[in-house]
Amino acid sequence: MLKRRIILLGWTLLLLAAFLVGGVLFWKYTTKPVVSVRVAAQLLRSEEMKFLVLRKIVSTVVLERKEKNWFWGDRDGVALAEVELFYGFDLSGIAEKDFRATDNGLELTLPDPEVLTVSVDLTTLRVLTRQSALSFWRDKALSSALADELRTHFAEAARKQFRDRRQLPERRELVALMNHWAGPRFAAAGVLITFK
Image (cartoon, rainbow, N blue to C red; front, side):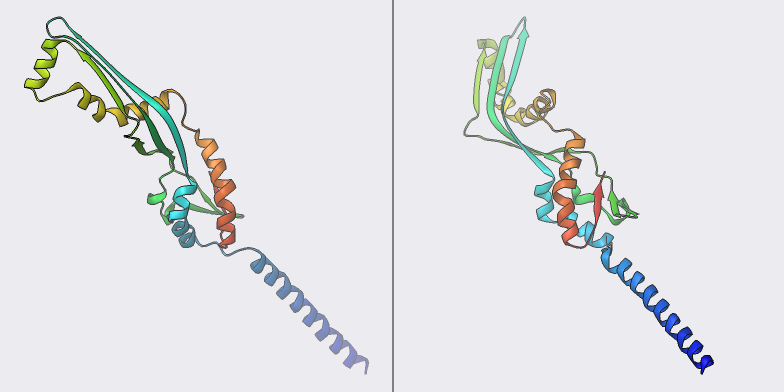
């Protein structure tokens, strides 16, 4: 009878140990979301994410050009307009190899932020020119116009002025925004991701 109780106690302890190990394993794998690099890469390239990683900056930009020539004379112009600039991370090139698995999920080092688009509000564009008669007739002969040159170079001048005025956000600010806004959206999709 004692032998039977010892065997029954042994089996009971073995069953309890099996349940304990099974419970620990179940808790470990069900509380931690399955990290899927493919899902993370697809989410990053989605349309919704494109808007989360961009900063829209609107400002008035002024482009001046002054040319002086002893023979042709003065050729001065000013162009000004309201410019809308989108600055942020281009996530279209993110690939699965860019992710690194960590104990807390995935880690992604973002590319350098860049100016993605510059849009000039043409309704606000004003171009003023002043030039000498010789300079004016030379432009006519060459099928050139100072006003057209100013319009052509305006978008590039806008990019430069945004940088020079330090209106573009710093990388660390954009990365913090990504972790704040994009992190919870990834967690809702079952992917824990940290941006660096």
